[in-house]
Amino acid sequence: MTVLHAPGARGAARLTAAVLGTLLAGVTACSPATSGSDTGSAETVATGLDVPWSIAFLDGTPLISARDSGQILELTGGEPRVIGTVDGVEPGGESGLLGLATHRDGLYVYSTGADGNRIQRFAVDGRPGSLSLGTADTIIDRLPSAAYHSGGRIAFGPDGMLYATVGDAGVSKDAQNLDTPAGSILRLTPDGDVPADNPFDGSPIYSYGHRNPQGIAWAADGTMFASEFGQDTWDELNVIEPGGNYGWPEVEGIAGDDRFVDPVQQWRPDEASPSGIEIADGTIHIANLRGEVLRTVPVADPTDPSSSEELLEGEYGRLRDVARTPDGELWVLTSNTDGRGSPADGDDRLLRLPG
Image (cartoon, rainbow, N blue to C red; front, side, top):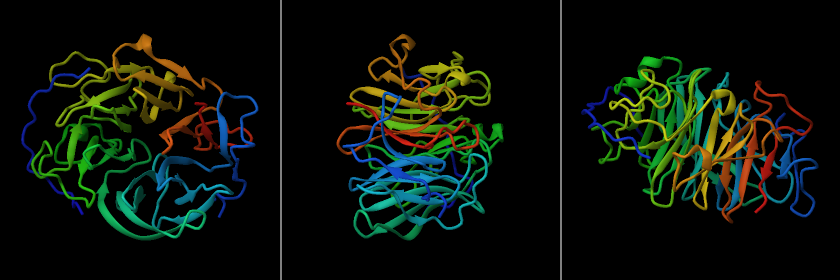
């Protein structure tokens, strides 16, 4: 387990910018034979979800986190069911039960507790259809949390390390302070230790100068991408470099300042608010909240805005997460019950994109 303290950070070299209780009530799963949206271009897998935040797959079984209730659900061929409630979750604003990731037989969970954000690893017992949340080990805790800018995404990289996004928790200047994880992306071993090859000695910080990084994913060649909520000017898609300083709060968007790594794409917040991302078949898929689109960006040329496409535009409202299933499908979570959307009948829902 990593215990946060003032790390002995060494200076980074200048980097070049690289191109159910209540939740379960009303939840309905749709079998592939009968599912399908009546009006949209995606297929409905489940409806009636209450503030869903993240999707992960454990041995092929889809799991969903519910931000405000602290519950984790499984979906397996019948009605979605709660496998357990994470103890001590304290929801509020953008905090609560957030990201999920799986590694080997463990379920990693990012959530907000009394002392800030934390990442725990849970055993999951039983078989699909009767899974239950087992005991928890704390991987890291006392991460900055707040009603706004609370980060929350976790994922395992191709190097087998655990990456986690941490927001600035509303204290912008902390994003430039290597003595705090606020406004950073962390890199840890699966047990929560600091890898020896991290860019700052003894520190879990992998990159910094972020406002509120949200989605992380890797291309086939190992390039790491991250989406980020901006303030009033620009939301961002970044290529993440070890030790990179992404400029917040000194700059927002593409600044052309050699001290910072520029984003490869930027969008106005009312067109974007990019949340979870997934890479499939050489394309980055970005779930957008305010923009209400699934935006695609080609990995081969992520700096060309004209090569992007917008899917599901205006069809399902706010989109929170996108994930690739073990058999290669893309699934998308909506986020219309989070207090900022306009829920329609059946919201929130899990969607399947056509192949």
